[in-house]
Image (cartoon, rainbow, N blue to C red; front, side, top):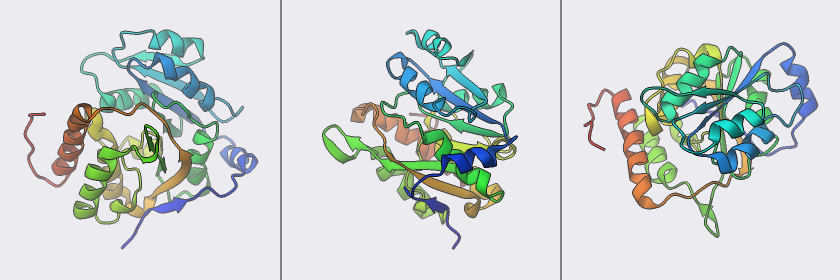
Length: 255
């Protein structure tokens, strides 16, 4: 059975990655809804390496705080999402707003986005023409515990992939918002609405390009806001719905 390629935390050669980039263009897209308190840190980290990022776009998903203002102050082009909101819709809009060869998506609510995230995510794509999608993986603390933060990931997404989509169960963080892809691949897939987007993207890419066209890279430890269980259930529903639809199983519209 074919499986995704895994890149660990080996010493990272940033100089070599920048050399491989050459004329390849890189865009960073950050979907954000009311994330003004953490967005600046994410954008600063994304642009920490001179010469790496050519486009920086924040998709403001109907924020009621000053997310858009923070984005603009930190050099991002702000795209205000219109119509129906949701992460999937925001990612699709961000892709359409950019023209780069490689597109990196980052979550806006992460409190410790690393300055090496973008470089580590695009490095496999620059090294191998056979790869079209790279997912980040990491340890996710839960409050004061060092692990346990990925509850929807571990209790819904990974079991679903293991049972229904051979090979994809090896992806350690299928719901990771830290994702990089080739434009030619991203433009061929459907962006599932809301929180179904990440698992749908994995399944679609594997279906079109093969599981071995996907890689995952270790980003260390990732910290963000831990949501209560009552907010996780709708996420799990979106994840399951996206997977079932891709297996041809009708799903109820009830959340």
